Image (cartoon, one colour):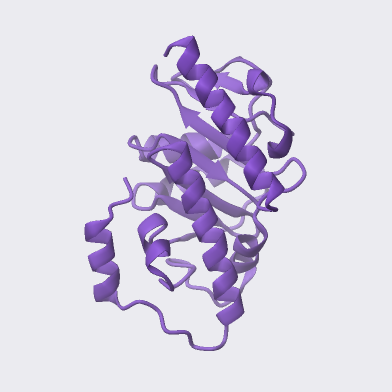
Length: 215
């Protein structure tokens, strides 16, 4: 990867991280972003970093084995990203947030653990699809990475119980857009919860998935 290309990716991570933060989709030092580089390594936001105030030059760089090379130390949740990439070699970027409405859905006792949010809108189906729930693990527990790995091959997004979403995309913009769509649909779901909303039919979902593959 050329220095120019890496600089562009670093700046894109910082720009989109700031956008997510300023719109309240992440807060404090929560949330992390990663992007696959052309040489098989990764750029990843640092541990305890605020996505609203990222310094592009200090974003972590990892080699193709996931070993930290330079920049600040990577997020302590880097293993979530590695687990997702291991099962989704086509993924070029991953976004993990503690976004309020998605976390709220992950705390509900009556959601379907195989598909946490029904297909309420076409764009949710197109950008997220089926969203399985990963059982609760204490933050930083390596077993959480194993749990994500068990679902990531069949799903581009997963929801960590009492924690938040992990979303992969074919580009950083695609991963961010899918994360935003998930959060807005989670908000819709909470607004409609208990009111028996009309979701898309299985036939409508199948048509969308055939026409608009996510990756």
